[in-house]
Image (cartoon, rainbow, N blue to C red; front, top):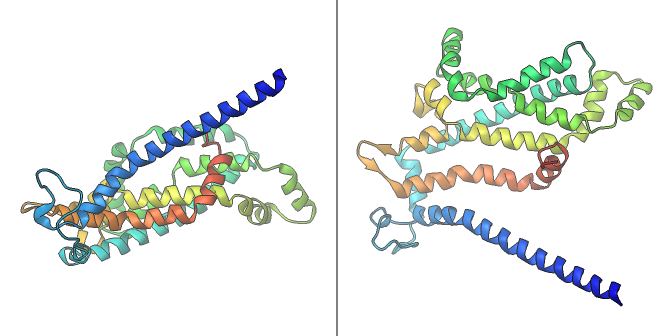
Length: 286
Protein backbone atom coordinates (compact mmCIF):
# COMPACT_ATOMS: atom_id res chain seq x y z
CA UNK A 1 0.00 0.00 0.00
CA UNK A 2 2.81 2.36 0.96
CA UNK A 3 4.72 1.48 -2.22
CA UNK A 4 1.66 2.27 -4.37
CA UNK A 5 1.22 5.62 -2.62
CA UNK A 6 4.89 6.46 -3.07
CA UNK A 7 4.67 5.46 -6.73
CA UNK A 8 1.71 7.76 -7.36
CA UNK A 9 3.44 10.63 -5.56
CA UNK A 10 6.60 10.10 -7.59
CA UNK A 11 4.59 10.00 -10.83
CA UNK A 12 2.74 13.19 -9.85
CA UNK A 13 6.00 14.99 -9.03
CA UNK A 14 7.48 13.97 -12.41
CA UNK A 15 4.42 15.37 -14.19
CA UNK A 16 4.68 18.65 -12.24
CA UNK A 17 8.41 18.97 -13.02
CA UNK A 18 7.70 18.29 -16.68
CA UNK A 19 4.97 20.93 -16.84
CA UNK A 20 7.13 23.51 -15.04
CA UNK A 21 10.13 22.85 -17.30
CA UNK A 22 8.00 23.15 -20.44
CA UNK A 23 6.46 26.42 -19.22
CA UNK A 24 9.91 27.83 -18.48
CA UNK A 25 11.18 26.78 -21.91
CA UNK A 26 8.19 28.42 -23.58
CA UNK A 27 8.81 31.65 -21.66
CA UNK A 28 12.50 31.67 -22.58
CA UNK A 29 11.69 30.95 -26.24
CA UNK A 30 9.11 33.76 -26.23
CA UNK A 31 11.72 36.11 -24.79
CA UNK A 32 14.07 35.30 -27.66
CA UNK A 33 11.31 35.64 -30.25
CA UNK A 34 10.12 39.11 -29.14
CA UNK A 35 13.06 41.02 -30.70
CA UNK A 36 12.78 38.94 -33.86
CA UNK A 37 9.05 39.64 -34.10
CA UNK A 38 9.64 43.36 -33.59
CA UNK A 39 12.29 43.32 -36.32
CA UNK A 40 9.92 41.66 -38.79
CA UNK A 41 7.12 44.06 -37.89
CA UNK A 42 9.40 47.09 -38.29
CA UNK A 43 10.59 45.84 -41.66
CA UNK A 44 7.00 46.11 -42.92
CA UNK A 45 6.30 49.64 -41.65
CA UNK A 46 6.40 52.89 -43.63
CA UNK A 47 9.53 54.94 -42.97
CA UNK A 48 7.69 57.66 -41.04
CA UNK A 49 6.01 55.20 -38.65
CA UNK A 50 9.09 53.39 -37.30
CA UNK A 51 9.37 55.69 -34.26
CA UNK A 52 5.83 56.54 -33.29
CA UNK A 53 4.59 57.67 -29.88
CA UNK A 54 3.21 55.57 -28.34
CA UNK A 55 5.09 52.68 -30.00
CA UNK A 56 3.00 50.39 -32.18
CA UNK A 57 3.87 46.91 -33.30
CA UNK A 58 2.21 47.26 -36.72
CA UNK A 59 2.10 50.26 -39.00
CA UNK A 60 -0.90 51.73 -40.76
CA UNK A 61 -0.06 49.57 -43.78
CA UNK A 62 2.06 46.52 -44.50
CA UNK A 63 4.80 47.53 -46.95
CA UNK A 64 6.24 44.43 -48.58
CA UNK A 65 7.84 46.90 -50.95
CA UNK A 66 10.49 47.57 -48.28
CA UNK A 67 12.19 44.31 -49.26
CA UNK A 68 12.33 45.43 -52.88
CA UNK A 69 13.61 48.85 -51.82
CA UNK A 70 16.52 47.12 -50.07
CA UNK A 71 17.70 45.75 -53.41
CA UNK A 72 17.27 49.15 -55.05
CA UNK A 73 18.89 51.21 -52.29
CA UNK A 74 22.10 49.14 -52.33
CA UNK A 75 23.40 46.15 -54.34
CA UNK A 76 22.26 43.93 -51.46
CA UNK A 77 21.81 40.94 -53.75
CA UNK A 78 25.51 41.17 -54.56
CA UNK A 79 26.33 41.20 -50.86
CA UNK A 80 24.23 38.05 -50.35
CA UNK A 81 25.98 36.26 -53.23
CA UNK A 82 29.39 37.28 -51.88
CA UNK A 83 28.38 36.06 -48.43
CA UNK A 84 27.27 32.70 -49.84
CA UNK A 85 30.50 32.30 -51.79
CA UNK A 86 32.74 33.15 -48.84
CA UNK A 87 30.74 31.11 -46.31
CA UNK A 88 30.41 28.04 -48.56
CA UNK A 89 34.07 27.96 -49.62
CA UNK A 90 35.27 28.72 -46.09
CA UNK A 91 33.09 25.97 -44.64
CA UNK A 92 34.39 23.46 -47.18
CA UNK A 93 38.02 24.29 -46.40
CA UNK A 94 37.42 24.16 -42.65
CA UNK A 95 35.63 20.80 -42.78
CA UNK A 96 38.35 19.19 -44.92
CA UNK A 97 41.29 20.62 -42.95
CA UNK A 98 39.72 19.98 -39.54
CA UNK A 99 38.75 16.38 -40.34
CA UNK A 100 42.27 15.54 -41.52
CA UNK A 101 44.00 17.16 -38.56
CA UNK A 102 41.50 15.73 -36.08
CA UNK A 103 42.09 12.21 -37.41
CA UNK A 104 45.85 12.71 -37.05
CA UNK A 105 45.49 13.83 -33.43
CA UNK A 106 42.92 11.15 -32.51
CA UNK A 107 44.16 8.02 -34.31
CA UNK A 108 47.71 8.33 -35.56
CA UNK A 109 50.51 7.73 -33.08
CA UNK A 110 53.47 10.10 -33.38
CA UNK A 111 55.93 11.70 -30.99
CA UNK A 112 54.78 14.94 -29.37
CA UNK A 113 51.17 14.51 -30.46
CA UNK A 114 49.60 15.68 -27.20
CA UNK A 115 52.03 18.59 -26.82
CA UNK A 116 51.30 19.84 -30.33
CA UNK A 117 47.57 19.45 -29.76
CA UNK A 118 47.79 21.44 -26.52
CA UNK A 119 49.64 24.23 -28.30
CA UNK A 120 47.07 24.10 -31.08
CA UNK A 121 44.25 24.52 -28.57
CA UNK A 122 45.98 27.48 -26.96
CA UNK A 123 45.42 29.46 -30.16
CA UNK A 124 41.73 29.56 -29.22
CA UNK A 125 42.63 31.98 -26.43
CA UNK A 126 43.86 34.63 -28.89
CA UNK A 127 41.03 37.01 -29.86
CA UNK A 128 40.54 37.94 -33.50
CA UNK A 129 41.10 41.62 -32.77
CA UNK A 130 44.72 40.88 -31.85
CA UNK A 131 45.37 39.08 -35.14
CA UNK A 132 43.81 41.47 -37.65
CA UNK A 133 46.85 43.76 -37.93
CA UNK A 134 49.50 41.06 -38.58
CA UNK A 135 46.99 39.21 -40.75
CA UNK A 136 46.39 42.31 -42.84
CA UNK A 137 50.15 42.82 -43.24
CA UNK A 138 50.43 39.21 -44.42
CA UNK A 139 47.56 39.67 -46.89
CA UNK A 140 49.20 42.81 -48.28
CA UNK A 141 52.53 40.99 -48.63
CA UNK A 142 50.77 38.20 -50.55
CA UNK A 143 48.85 40.68 -52.69
CA UNK A 144 45.51 39.35 -51.47
CA UNK A 145 44.00 42.57 -50.13
CA UNK A 146 40.54 43.16 -51.59
CA UNK A 147 40.18 39.53 -52.73
CA UNK A 148 37.98 36.57 -51.92
CA UNK A 149 40.88 34.41 -50.75
CA UNK A 150 41.65 37.03 -48.10
CA UNK A 151 38.12 36.61 -46.78
CA UNK A 152 38.27 32.80 -46.76
CA UNK A 153 41.72 31.41 -46.02
CA UNK A 154 43.06 33.34 -42.98
CA UNK A 155 40.36 31.96 -40.67
CA UNK A 156 39.96 28.52 -42.24
CA UNK A 157 42.56 26.72 -40.10
CA UNK A 158 41.39 27.12 -36.53
CA UNK A 159 41.59 24.74 -33.60
CA UNK A 160 37.85 24.63 -32.88
CA UNK A 161 36.96 22.29 -35.74
CA UNK A 162 39.93 20.06 -34.99
CA UNK A 163 38.98 19.79 -31.33
CA UNK A 164 35.33 19.11 -32.15
CA UNK A 165 36.05 16.28 -34.60
CA UNK A 166 38.87 14.83 -32.50
CA UNK A 167 36.45 14.40 -29.60
CA UNK A 168 34.10 12.51 -31.90
CA UNK A 169 36.81 10.31 -33.43
CA UNK A 170 37.89 9.27 -29.92
CA UNK A 171 34.42 7.82 -29.31
CA UNK A 172 34.59 5.52 -32.37
CA UNK A 173 35.77 1.99 -31.44
CA UNK A 174 39.20 1.27 -32.83
CA UNK A 175 38.03 -2.26 -33.71
CA UNK A 176 36.12 -0.85 -36.68
CA UNK A 177 39.32 0.45 -38.23
CA UNK A 178 41.26 -2.68 -37.35
CA UNK A 179 38.63 -4.80 -39.11
CA UNK A 180 39.00 -2.61 -42.20
CA UNK A 181 42.79 -2.94 -42.04
CA UNK A 182 42.50 -6.74 -41.85
CA UNK A 183 40.36 -6.62 -45.01
CA UNK A 184 43.15 -4.75 -46.78
CA UNK A 185 42.13 -1.14 -46.33
CA UNK A 186 44.89 1.32 -45.51
CA UNK A 187 44.81 4.37 -43.28
CA UNK A 188 43.41 6.61 -46.00
CA UNK A 189 40.62 4.23 -46.99
CA UNK A 190 39.80 3.60 -43.35
CA UNK A 191 39.50 7.32 -42.81
CA UNK A 192 37.35 7.88 -45.90
CA UNK A 193 35.15 4.78 -45.66
CA UNK A 194 34.86 4.25 -41.90
CA UNK A 195 35.47 7.46 -39.97
CA UNK A 196 33.94 10.12 -42.18
CA UNK A 197 30.55 8.37 -42.67
CA UNK A 198 30.29 7.88 -38.91
CA UNK A 199 31.23 11.52 -38.30
CA UNK A 200 28.37 13.03 -40.29
CA UNK A 201 26.61 14.48 -37.20
CA UNK A 202 29.83 16.09 -35.98
CA UNK A 203 30.60 17.35 -39.48
CA UNK A 204 27.12 18.88 -39.65
CA UNK A 205 27.71 20.72 -36.36
CA UNK A 206 31.06 22.03 -37.59
CA UNK A 207 29.60 23.04 -40.95
CA UNK A 208 26.74 25.00 -39.37
CA UNK A 209 28.96 26.78 -36.84
CA UNK A 210 31.53 27.63 -39.51
CA UNK A 211 28.97 28.82 -42.05
CA UNK A 212 27.34 31.12 -39.48
CA UNK A 213 30.76 32.43 -38.39
CA UNK A 214 31.74 33.35 -41.95
CA UNK A 215 28.29 34.70 -42.75
CA UNK A 216 28.24 37.01 -39.71
CA UNK A 217 31.87 38.13 -39.88
CA UNK A 218 32.09 41.91 -39.92
CA UNK A 219 35.46 43.19 -38.66
CA UNK A 220 37.76 41.31 -41.03
CA UNK A 221 35.79 41.99 -44.26
CA UNK A 222 35.52 45.66 -43.25
CA UNK A 223 39.32 45.86 -42.97
CA UNK A 224 40.50 43.76 -45.89
CA UNK A 225 37.94 44.72 -48.57
CA UNK A 226 38.34 48.07 -50.34
CA UNK A 227 35.72 47.73 -53.08
CA UNK A 228 32.77 47.09 -50.79
CA UNK A 229 30.05 47.23 -53.45
CA UNK A 230 31.80 44.53 -55.51
CA UNK A 231 33.17 42.17 -52.83
CA UNK A 232 31.49 43.17 -49.60
CA UNK A 233 29.57 40.62 -47.55
CA UNK A 234 26.20 40.96 -45.83
CA UNK A 235 27.32 42.49 -42.47
CA UNK A 236 29.39 45.11 -44.29
CA UNK A 237 26.45 45.81 -46.58
CA UNK A 238 24.15 46.31 -43.59
CA UNK A 239 26.55 48.92 -42.27
CA UNK A 240 26.06 50.98 -45.44
CA UNK A 241 22.45 51.69 -44.47
CA UNK A 242 23.83 54.03 -41.78
CA UNK A 243 25.14 57.14 -43.50
CA UNK A 244 25.53 60.89 -43.15
CA UNK A 245 21.97 61.41 -44.39
CA UNK A 246 20.47 59.32 -41.58
CA UNK A 247 19.37 55.74 -41.18
CA UNK A 248 16.59 53.98 -43.07
CA UNK A 249 15.49 51.81 -40.18
CA UNK A 250 12.67 50.07 -42.02
CA UNK A 251 15.13 49.07 -44.74
CA UNK A 252 17.72 48.07 -42.14
CA UNK A 253 15.21 45.73 -40.53
CA UNK A 254 14.13 44.30 -43.90
CA UNK A 255 17.76 43.67 -44.85
CA UNK A 256 18.38 42.07 -41.44
CA UNK A 257 15.46 39.67 -41.96
CA UNK A 258 16.85 38.77 -45.39
CA UNK A 259 20.31 38.19 -43.93
CA UNK A 260 18.98 35.88 -41.20
CA UNK A 261 16.97 33.67 -43.54
CA UNK A 262 19.85 31.53 -44.96
CA UNK A 263 21.36 30.64 -41.58
CA UNK A 264 17.94 29.93 -40.04
CA UNK A 265 17.08 27.65 -42.96
CA UNK A 266 20.41 25.85 -42.64
CA UNK A 267 19.85 25.19 -38.94
CA UNK A 268 16.33 23.88 -39.58
CA UNK A 269 17.51 21.54 -42.34
CA UNK A 270 20.34 20.10 -40.23
CA UNK A 271 18.56 20.15 -36.89
CA UNK A 272 18.50 16.36 -36.48
CA UNK A 273 22.23 16.06 -37.21
CA UNK A 274 22.98 19.01 -34.93
CA UNK A 275 21.32 17.38 -31.93
CA UNK A 276 23.15 14.10 -32.51
CA UNK A 277 26.44 15.82 -33.17
CA UNK A 278 26.35 18.04 -30.09
CA UNK A 279 25.39 15.06 -27.92
CA UNK A 280 28.28 12.95 -29.22
CA UNK A 281 31.17 15.43 -29.46
CA UNK A 282 31.48 16.62 -25.90
CA UNK A 283 29.58 19.92 -26.34
CA UNK A 284 26.54 18.82 -24.36
CA UNK A 285 28.16 19.41 -20.98
CA UNK A 286 29.16 15.81 -20.35
